[in-house]
Length: 273
Image (tube, rainbow, N blue to C red; front, side, top):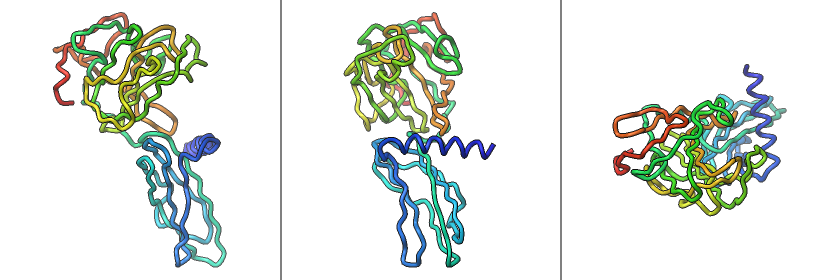
């Protein structure tokens, strides 16, 4: 199993390195001949960066590999390599992914429905359902183009894309998806997808609370018609791992919104998250 994990991480590194240098790993040579290894995050997003090294005739100051999360446009020190023989060699490799791969979802959190108080919408597709939610804890709410989408939980806006103006019922249209991602205080992320062009009402770095307006629904990306695709997930090096989130279905009911059911937002969004 350990060997398989190394192969996966190396593959991710290769794919990432073919793009811009979003994350760089470098060393600084010290007066005693030791090397200090650093990583720098050149993006606007939190990145999880793991570094592994192989070496001969040297000692590492820490057990490897080392995984850290690095804030946007920041650097982090990882470890030192110190020569212990006259002849020595080393190399290091790294992998990274956007988000916090150490995040664990707080299952005690109950989420608000993603629209304004007193509004009511039908669920077209719920958790683990066909045609597009197999092995995925995601919801599709049927919404007309331009419907106001509200935050289901407090957090910080992590990423925004809203410059696309195309959608179709084919997977190859996924690249045209408009979305807002919001990171919560436990490191989980809420994905609000298929927004209309210029439909975002927030910017990266904005702090929001539940009930805040974050965007307008649309049909961009992999979509057969206007709707909101909503999913909560945590990041892993293998990709997104969706979370079985529960919602306030009304003032007295907590659970998972079911397909072909209509739910009215009854909760007072001024309550603390």
